[in-house]
Length: 394
Image (cartoon, rainbow, N blue to C red; front, top):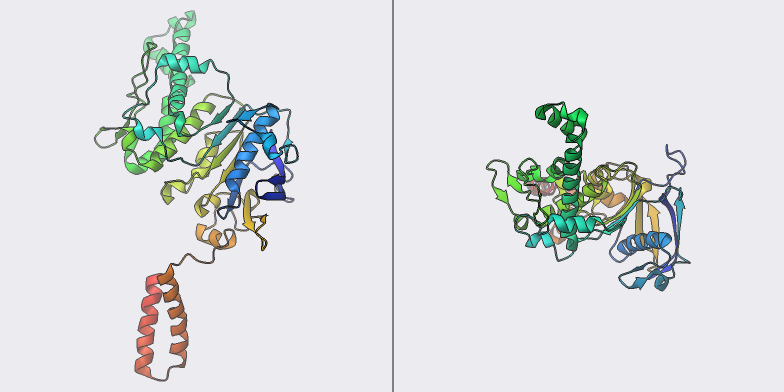
């Protein structure tokens, strides 16, 4: 199940907008719903409102009387604001919403591991749930998902060890077969987090984790310094790292070991507090950890937007009367983010006040050099022209 079209009759300040979420003619996937979508646009154009509406509409599609935080969709006239779907027979199994980072991040209050227990995790696992709003108040729930993954593997191991055919093996032989055929979630989490922790010289110590056995036990698994193996508490990590490892870790826990999971995910401002080198492959990081998922992103970052095909970019803007309009992208996938600023974001340049003054002087010097008859003066102009050009890369 995928979203292939959105019609907004009236949604807050958005009026009479129809957005096609399918690949264009001559594309290898022509006519099929987009695998991923990126909303970009100026502040106030409604990127987050559209993401939130899509999330709530899909919830209401499954549960007609659904009410989220006391706010029923009928309040925004959801029957005249329409979504159209592809392959509704294959209904989604997971629906995910990742809000932009809030001021509160529970990991910033976490010393070494989030406080929960095996018993609490088992109780939480009994709740049937297929939609998750993954914000930073859900740290305990995330750690409980990790514990459940660990517990399932331990139970499977105990069950397999008791089988007569496995009792014929030595302990070493059984361990080798079990490890090969039953992936360890903590190792998978270690690999997923390594994309950012490696940059900082840190690692998640999956091998050294202390597993819970009693109901009151917690899972003790730490981030450490590579060179010294010193434990780093989660509260010591930067905002960007906490942001990344929580969201990707939660995503990984929901999809790990699941086959043919059909999902839709909405991610608002994934770039928050992350350095540009981390952003270079962030879209792939999300998509590879959630196979068979249609993703909708909203971003202000040209680095993030460059990771989408032009037809996957929805660019929101204001017309002369301040009505919201949209268009598809122009810059090719993987283009220099600076080119996207011009081609898709509509930003001519990002020079500050001083830089603009220097650009004006640089242009002025071109004319002065050309028309000056004083050789000494011309040399001074040339030196100044070269100095500004070298400094600013003009």
